[in-house]
Image (cartoon, rainbow, N blue to C red; front, side, top):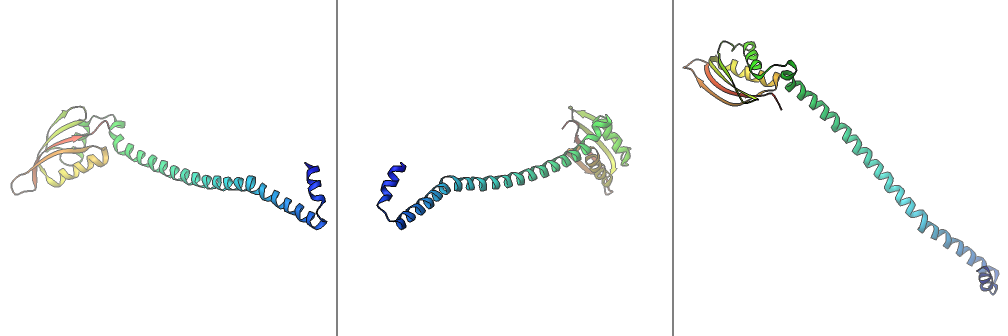
Length: 169
């Protein structure tokens, strides 16, 4: 191959030979750049962008995981109070009624399945009944699923039939 190149350039004057050599070197550099360096450089840029995106995703996942743990801890605090105390829903309802000044108005509590109880309240102040239901939800994580309230005369006293759900979630 070298002999072929020497034969081809033998008829050229030195200036043309130098121009041909310089052109060959420039062509070789451009060929190396376009075949090797440019694809490598583009791939490197894509990888760097990918790393930045992965870091942003990791940060978002860490933030979401921390929020999930916080919410899980809050839920465990609210719903787990009854379970950690080892109390049944019946005793939780009774205890909360006594704490919230409607214990004497609590006439009957009866279980309805594994996670519900029915409660009958007679001649209780309406405000106290509402506070008692709020306390059950906020402190013990149980909630009212059905309620029927009847006003007694012109006073603020009511009779109520309430179905409360709690326990296993």
